[in-house]
Image (cartoon, rainbow, N blue to C red; front, side):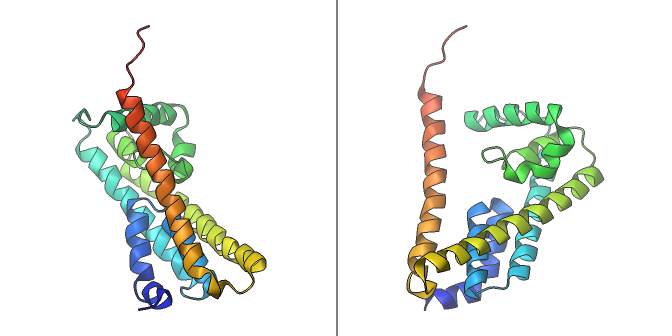
Length: 193
C-alpha cells in the first residue's frame, strides 16, 4: 500500500485522533497532505478543529470531575499544573482562547480550567473560538510549508515520503527532548532556600 493510499484512506481518522490528544504535528502534516492533494484543506481544518475541541472538552470535564483529587503521582504534571494555574489566574480569557499555542502547558490547561471556577458555557465558547483559530492557522501553516517545499524541491512527489517522515521525526524528537528534560529535572536535587 502506498503512502498516498494510506493518507487518503486513514488521514482524517488519524487527524481526529491526533488532535483529540494533542495535535500540532499531525495538523501540520495534514495541511501538507492537503497541499499534495491527498486530503481537502477545508476538511482538514474541520476535522482537526473538531478533534481539538472535543479533546479539550473531555479534559475540561475530567478536571471538573477530579477537581478535589490532588495530582501527586506525576511530579512533572503537578509542576505544569501549578504553572498553568498561575498563568490562568493572571490572564484567564486570553489563556482560555489561546492555550493550544502554549507548548508544554497545552495538555494540562483544559484540566486545570475544568478544576477551577470557570462555567461550562464560558469554556465551551472560548474553546470553540480557540479551536477554529488554531485549526485554520496550523492547517494553513502546513499547506504553506508544502508550497515552500515545492518551490525548493521542485516536484514534491519524489521527496514526499522523506518530508512526511522528517516532519513526523521532528515532532517525535521535540517530544523526546521535553520528556528527557522533565526526567532530568526530577532527578536533580532541589537546592534549599
